[in-house]
Length: 215
Image 1: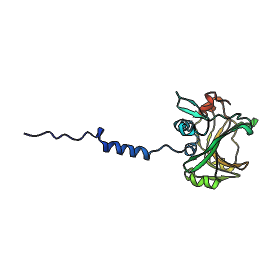
Image 2: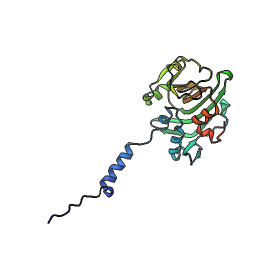
Image 3: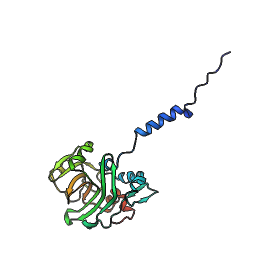
Image 4: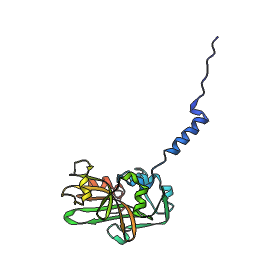
């Protein structure tokens, strides 16, 4: 008589649970600064996912249905009130984030310019060393990464090497770029959306403001 050999049920195995836990630990969410590097709308989902920790140092607004969060500033049109300081520095993958900057300029025929990102308590050299995957390029007084261009309202985003030479967006086009600046003694890691930015593009790239956080 042959006996049926019963195999262990891996779904309930303590060993499997341990392995899954280790796997989850190694697949940790990207730091907030890393989530900003591609200047994608998904950055605001990263803020939502890390809202518990971020909410300890700054007031957040959120949309639970869309799974996004954002940091409101007093006035995006005024340089003096476009920063929301953190109550204490936030350790973010080795970088000390001290505030959030969200600024808008309207330059008439050159279009509108929108900047958002973090103020960092570190030199630009230290930020670049902490985020080497950005592949930084020097462009005048800034360092930039991953410049993209949208040639018209219906065109997709594509790489834009010309941005490194400081050429302004042509009429009808929009640019998106990651930049590292030093202004007023502060290091800022920012995304920039500039040029012909219509409402549809603005709402796509800035879902936080599409929620009525204030323009």
